[in-house]
Amino acid sequence: MTENLTIRPISGPDELSLFNTLPYVLNEELEDDLAAGRRQAAWMWVAVRGDRVVARIAWWGRESEPVPLLLDIFDLDDAAPDRRAVGERLVAAAMAAVVPEGQTPPEYLRMVPPDWHDDPVPVQERLAILADAGARPLVERLRFEWRPGTPLPEPRGRLAFRPVRDEGEMIDLMTEVLEGTLDGHSRNDLRTMSPREAARSHFDGELAHYRSPRDWWLVGTLPDGEPVGFACPARNEYGPIVGYIAVRPGHRGKGYIDDLLGEATRFLAGQDVPRIRASTDVGNVPMARAFERAGFANFERVVTMIW
Image (cartoon, rainbow, N blue to C red):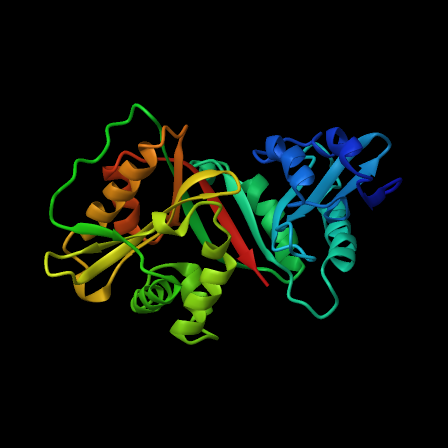
């Protein structure tokens, strides 16, 4: 099996149409990603038989990073009878070239339709190949989207809102809300880090890279000024998001998540945005229900694996 197969990185943007032979929701972003430096041709590999792409794999990173941060594309030609063997060969060759020796491979994520469990085999086939390469499931997440024309949550008047004072306050709040967290990534971090180390890592890896001003981040307070929680309306590389939102442990169970999410949504909607996106783990039912109450629709899921 796997005869007459060539496994290699693409030569550059000139081969993007070849790479995009296999369909996936991220295809329309790849041209801009390459131009912006979020992807490199050396991180985008194909397994080709003749002029047909049988499998492909690609990583994503940031302009300033010399190594990729995510493995977010791994596709097979579902019509190829030897696709499993091809995928295994592609993963082994590309990982050996892209991931520095001795370094843990980046997290893998796969965007899937909300109803993917009705036809799980194509996704499970890809996950199985990566599992054989050492990956293990971490968490499945729900992706939500608010669109203009959707009614905005009305202010409830229970909280006042102010900007986060500085980075130090943000780290303090992020550390505190890790107590009892339902977030799978955070819980995984807490296996090897202290709460403050986990908060610092999250801040440096995500919040510090938002493209929007930090004075967009808001703290919800009681009338006496006591913080109840926070929300981070922001813009990342692809558009407006509710990047992080949480309620302090002592104030949970009182519905304050709706106040925080409502304020963040109204703030972003007031900027005439085409959409607002957010996500939460499948297991974080309270957060998922809060998004639904605020008018967000679950348009996609994300399956993640780590090494």
